[in-house]
Length: 240
Ligand SMILES: N[C@@H](CCC(=O)N[C@@H](CS)C(=O)NCC(=O)O)C(=O)O
Image 1: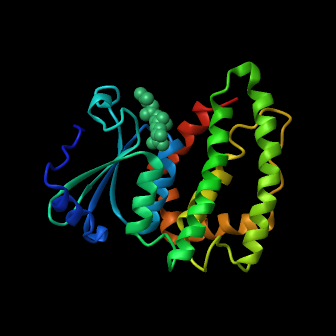
Image 2 (image 1 turned 180 degrees about the horizontal axis):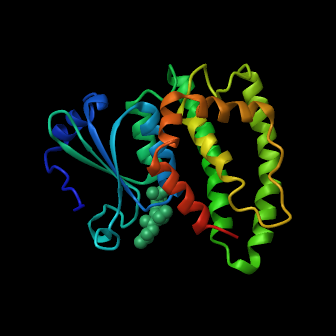
Image 3 (image 1 turned 180 degrees about the vertical axis):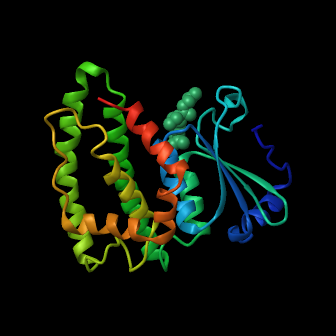
């Protein structure tokens, strides 16, 4: 597929398009045939029930055309025909969260969700460092990651219990933080060097993952051939 052309218009016109109801939009998410940085936007769009096309990018023919020279990128064709282009995975997630009501009920919940998202993102970044560490130091890096992770989950457990151990980080419905945590936990067993075990997860965190997976739209997305293909490719790509 050729690279879409974003609408050139005044900032005011683009802002007006961006404020339209995204439930009426069509999304295109460009990434490689893997999970990694597109996994969370994909999950969020699935949960939102958005009209989305997942495109395995024809890289490098597209690289120079993208805003920052990397993927994922997302396009939204809004109900008035405007084509908006988005870059940077976390900024894409934030936009989806805002447009599809995954940022809580009020400004305080939004703040808390942002905090959890940042903290989860830090763990994901550390995890990615393990993935790309040279073979000879991977085991050591993985050990360091797991030691830090084992302490971090205890802090998360405390917050989850304070929130009523209801399968959510904040409030009583699925948020960006819950979806991001489910992705992090899902990745843990992916890169375990032989002889290492995933730290035992607190029951409250397992409950978040189960709550996310039990959602009908998430379950439907995970059952698609597309999801299965990305999952299998990721497991094959990042084998220790
Ligand atoms: N900060 C960016 C990083 C994106 C990034 O590093 N993308 C990688 C794939 S995960 C990429 O596009 N690599 C290909 C390239 O740089 O040519 C984000 O979070 O979106």
